[in-house]
Image (cartoon, rainbow, N blue to C red; front, side, top):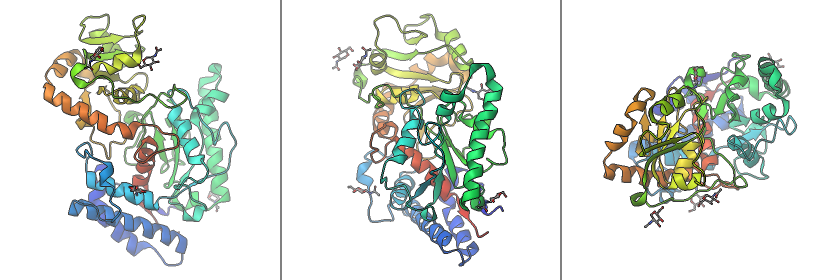
Length: 424
Ligand SMILES: *[C@@H]1O[C@H](CO)[C@@H](O)[C@H](O)[C@H]1NC(C)=O
Ligand SMILES: *[C@@H]1O[C@H](CO)[C@@H](O)[C@H](O)[C@H]1NC(C)=O
Ligand SMILES: *[C@@H]1O[C@H](CO)[C@@H](O)[C@H](O)[C@H]1NC(C)=O
Ligand SMILES: *[C@@H]1O[C@H](CO)[C@@H](O)[C@H](O)[C@H]1NC(C)=O
Ligand SMILES: *[C@@H]1O[C@H](CO)[C@@H](O)[C@H](O)[C@H]1NC(C)=O
């Protein structure tokens, strides 16, 4: 039954190991399974081109879209990323299972902090999207279009929390049972080329009831908490986006970096141990340079405060992820990430140290010192890269090249490149 081989390598090492994977692929595939062979052959070519781009420090294919990217230092390896992205655009096909009914499947929230979940599902289901396979035999990956946020919204009753978790798990397990019975694809890979997308805090709970079933499934989650079982090489960390303005969040430049009067800003609930510490050290206007509010002062405008702050604090709350990360980037404010166990979104390609500041929870009392120690010239560099990286955090309807939808797709693509389907 186990016909998928997982290459147990970390994604940051992915690109240097691609040739190895390719050689294995060549020797292990039998000719009697032509369709699977064709799929694996396409992936092997993509791996080869990516590796070549890394080694040659240039783009191996002719349709080099380097011009799209003017600033490349914010990537761990710009050649790997651009080549891989181009290979994805040329090659990647995803089959969306038709099973299931709205609102629990094929639908998702569009106007809350979990809206990226609904957006992703909606964009995938747009008619004729080039990444969507016409037939499952041509697909490299399989999308389970279930919305955890909608399951919670429609079925959760506050009186039955633990019972609800089990019901939620059963809905998804049943879905997998149906597709595994009807089609050969789930059994072929034990789920390793399948994925679901969940931004809801409870997204990771789906797989807890039956860990064996979910051993290989790619979970695309906002709540990417490693101490709750998030596995960076298998799962994908997705950014949270608060979709208030008809689902298109405001993206701008904010004030010029020379004209931002607030050193550091945060407004939000004091919940979770990280924020408790933040409020302990910096709440109640203890220092006017570090503004930490649970409620905004009357008459103040949140977006405008972000746009006139140099640094925007993004502490974890109850859960590791926060839409603030995206909001800060959208307003040209350098995010200050304060977290434990959080795998930052798209961090297998993005070099977060180039456009954010990371402060350990234990260093919260030194926050001001940490920020004061950053020279103004360094701040200007960080801010410039925040503006450059905006495109990767921007939601467009319909999606545009390199935007957040494509970053999610690319993360799934990388994980699919990282294993190979073998003969049964
Ligand atoms: C590269 O850019 C051109 C536009 O200049 C676009 O038509 C093409 O789709 C892009 N290719 C990829 C793989 O993104
Ligand atoms: C997949 O495996 C399950 C469990 O062994 C089995 O019940 C199911 O029939 C299989 N699906 C197909 C399409 O053979
Ligand atoms: C500087 O910021 C102030 C206050 O936010 C604003 O009124 C002014 O237009 C800004 N000036 C420049 C040059 O951006
Ligand atoms: C806050 O400011 C932004 C940007 O200037 C503006 O678009 C928005 O309407 C304002 N919000 C409120 C509630 O006034
Ligand atoms: C992450 O997971 C651990 C273990 O379940 C938990 O203690 C912690 O509160 C979670 N959230 C954050 C923000 O770290």
